[in-house]
Image (cartoon, rainbow, N blue to C red):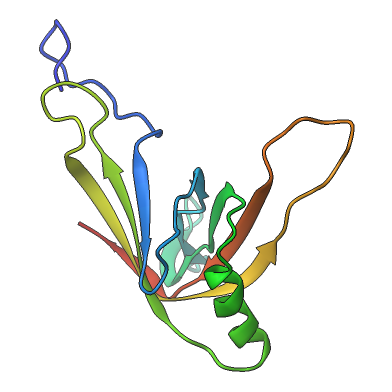
Length: 149
C-alpha cells in the first residue's frame, strides 16, 4: 500500500497466520526464528597479505518458535509426544504474512514454507497467582530449510 508520497508502506508484523498440516487450532500470536546463515571458511593465501578469501561452506536454517495463547486442544502436544516416543512425523508448515490495511487488507503478500518440520521443544505456561497475564505455550520446530513464495 502506498503512502501519500507514492512510497510503499512497510508491512506490519501483526497480520500473519501459521498453517500446520493436521492441526486445526493453530492460532499463533508470535513466530520467531525465520533466519538462515551461511558458514564461511576463511583461507589465507600465501603471499597475499591484504585480505582473506571467504568461501561458503554450509548453510544453516535456525529453528522456528511459535507462541500462542493456551487452547484446550492438545494436537500440538500429541505431535511432540510422538517425537519423544521415537516416531518422527514431518509436517508441512507455512508462515503467511498478510496486508494489514487499505484495499488489499487480508491479501497474502509473502509465505515461508518450512520443509520437513517437526517439534523439538514444547514449553507450557508459567503460573503465578500474583500476575494477571494470558497463559502462553510455545512450540519450537526443526526443519531442513524453507522456501519463500
